[in-house]
Image (tube, rainbow, N blue to C red; front, side, top):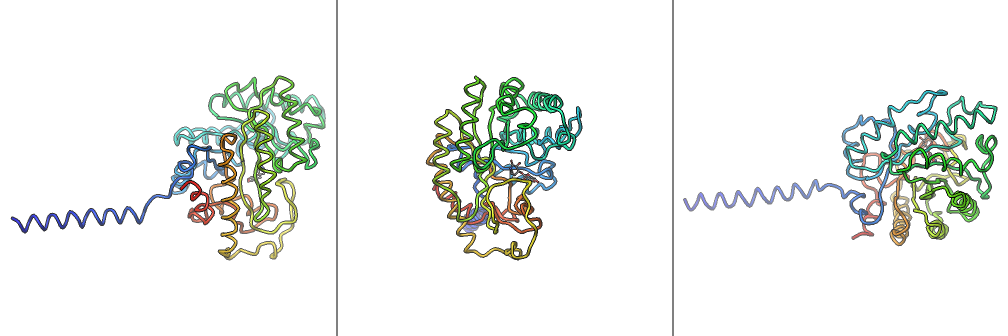
Length: 368
Ligand code: XIL
């Protein structure tokens, strides 16, 4: 009897120890959304494939790591409004369902943008037709998702690098007040969504000044604008920390929420900055140095940039409502295909196998 008791006791210890060590071995990766839950939302951009949830492991990973979703492409006008008067909401409705199921905020990206326009809009010649498209598009898309999205990038990339207004079909046919008009229409169509202006390089002093001018103009017209998105497509070793901090402060001083909306830190060579999707560079092997793997020294350098960035974001967490990565993992990043096609890039904090990179560890460490 006594022996039996000892055998049982020993087996109990053995089982509980092995259960514990098993648990330790497969400890789930801390979710970025949980680590920063008292600071800001942590978002990601989903491809059509990810919205269709064809890879269950990846879907689970997305659910565990992020609490905000942006559609990387499928809410843009060329996809959601492919022909005059015809809309295709199938994938947009799917990302909405996904965000509801997984308890994530959904960001609409984007209502008015000169890129990824449907072909029929690019061909419009007369101002009345452009105006009709502009009004109908904003009304139809924004009202459909009212009360369902957290916010919309109402206008994307309306500025040149020097802070003047970019020459687009909208500026050309509707005049410089089109940005204010877009916000006025969006406010009417979706009273429950936050309304944002979004751009790249708008942390740079000249473009920032242009951005502030646009915001003040919207505000002076008595139209609502709730936030400004700094896309955050930055480069290894060249992240403009001082400009970023000054911009966060300047935008917040206008009463706006600040968001980092498309974060990535590119590691491959390129001879210009910014993120104009229409700018292309010819492919050349010297522009693709890490096709067979990336040196650890580069990953460590990237970790330092990410660490410094998140330290800055945490310092200003009272002003920053969301930090969204432009993609889930390195393999999905648009920077594998832009501005040079067919490269192997490493701009995010998770690698191609959904494993955390030194950059992930570095930002998590800030909260320990
Ligand atoms: C990019 C997507 O990631 C790509 O898949 C697509 O081919 C081009 O657009 N600024 C933006 C985003 O506002 O919508 C862009 O997304 C990247 C630059």
